[in-house]
Image 1 (cartoon, rainbow, N blue to C red):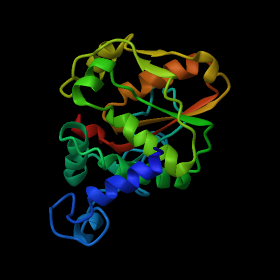
Image 2: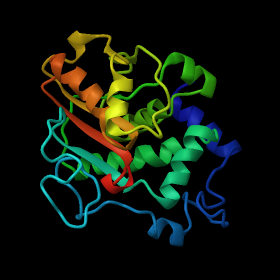
Image 3: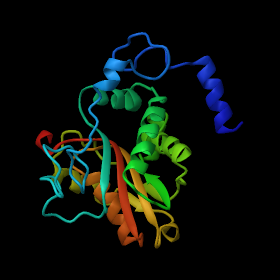
Image 4: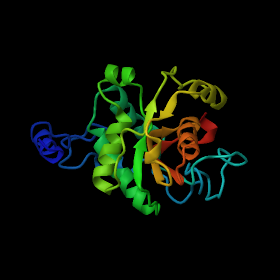
Length: 239
C-alpha cells in the first residue's frame, strides 16, 4: 500500500480537521480556527539573516550567532518557539499526535522555497533507536518525510545516525549541550554527502548546539554546504 493511499484511508477514518488544534473550537476544514492561525508567531522580516531567529529588527548577525563560527550557510525557522507553537510541538513529541508532522512539513516546504534554498537532498536530526522505539516514532523523521513529499527534495534516511544516547538537554546551557553532544552523532554513508548541498531539518533550534553538531559532521565529511530548517527557534534571551 503506497503512502498516498494510506493517507487517504487515515483521513477518512481519523479526520483531524473538525476542531482547532490550538483552542479546540469546532472548525470546518484546516487545522486551526482563523483567530489561532492569525496569532501563530511566524518569523517574518524581523529576523537574523544568518541563523533565522526572530529579532527586534532585520540584522545580518544577531547576538546568538555573531562572533562565532557556524557550519551552516543559513538557517530559517517558521515560528518563534512560543505560545501555541510550543503546545503543537509538544503534542507531536509527547502526546502521540503524529499528524502534526503534516502541518509542520507543509510549513517547512513553503519556507524552503521562500528562502531560495536549492539543496540536493534533506536529512533530519535523528533520535537514538532506543528513544524512537520507546516513543513509537521519530518526530523529526515524520516532519522531514512530509516536507520531502511536498517539496520534492529527496530524503536520505541513512546518512546521519544517533550513535550515542544523550541526557535530555532542556535545562542545559549552550556549553553543557555542546559537551553532552560530543560523539553522539555519526555519518553512516559519507560517500552520499561529498560535494552535495545538504538540508538539515529539526523541530526546534534552541541554542543551536544540536544543529551545529550535525552540520559540522556534514561539512567535515565533505558536504559542499549545509542549510538548516526548523519548525521553530528560540530567541537568545530565553535560554
